[in-house]
Length: 550
Image 1 (cartoon, rainbow, N blue to C red):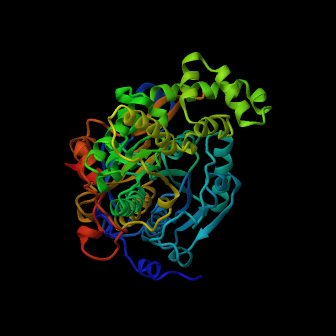
Image 2 (cartoon, one colour):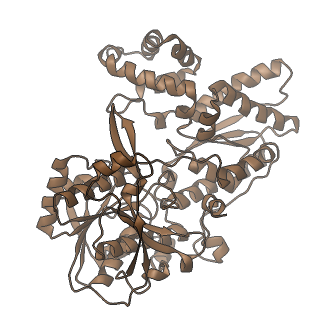
Image 3 (cartoon, rainbow, N blue to C red):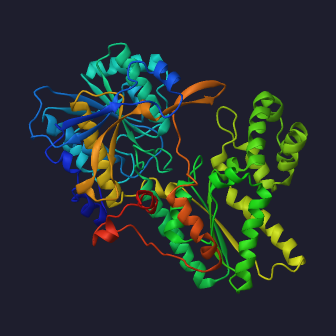
């Protein structure tokens, strides 16, 4: 296999560990008080009777001794890729070997489906060495199959028994770790001797709380996107003739968009949570964007950059109602709709079957967006919001608005525009030093939890802005993060999704700078991720948690 010079150099990088793990994963466990769920405590305690109320744990360094017993562990990568996943597995492997050199690690292939189908490989030191400090999930692959049914739980237990597996580590986002919580409780309730531990993964940044400061991969992905945004800004400021509208990943939360704005000082940054809080209409958003463009044009600046979270349409009240009504319509009249062959017929069908209010909203949208709202549906018949080209929607509507403003003498510029979507570019990048270290610490902490016999916990590393010598390793009961939400017509226990907090430091700082960045060309060019050099260039945490820590 041919590798690049950078990959060769990164293979030699040794991730830094929290001090508590310096002598291996056989650590001293410090237990806190019994915990409760973040909401719906009574329901969560009933649903997770076997694991609810466990204490939060922190680690102190052990004496370097090993365990007499051997432990076999299975690991699953679940959901979309995030930079650093390979280092979680590396930390888990090294931690297990520090507990007992005879311990083994098995990787279930293709995600949770491999756990049920017993599709696996043994991860050896030789095999793992090719993946240390690299991006992607290709070491064992990932998948979006969910572990939800008792049949799946039992089948996985049978497979673990055959391999002598004592514990399973699930590396995933909020849904994956919700399933890890269900699995842990089911096994404990039924006296199945398999521990379950989770690790917090998602570039979207929406798996975070008072216990989990950041999900892994967020730092690297935002740095990749910010480099690209900076490159576009440099071109933008050079040619001075285009407005660039950039849609960024983040369907349910706007953390990525906000972080990239903090890193680059884009002229416009839309935050979905603010749109929802203020009840802003689509027309109000378009008017705001048009006003910024017009104000910059007054100074002769017919260029700029706008950042848009991919899920913003669901935060706009009238569009959110439209999507909900479309989902119902396309579900109940699926056969009639699918019998139509032409786009025009489908659009007319939708217009005639929506309520008067939502039909008017649908009619106001550009034809491209009308088609995307009806054609791109998931296997359940629901609109796939992440596939809607929101940047093109806003461009088209802003162009119309600016034409109206020009006729009224309120706009003197020329509106040239370019559209971009940054998504997959950031999911499998080689992890930043921060993510390489953080992920390695999460994996090592998971092995410490397993060595201590714990189940139903999420591995955690805290105090992330203080440098690795001050990082605090430990474990958080997953039930502590749970609440009950209404999904598909039923109450479901899920990890509470973290949205951008409008009263928190990152957003408040953005608000304090927003008007300045809108008018001035105060672009910042972050450049590519740096792996070698001064710590202030290579090892710093992202702007979001820096501001939160203050």
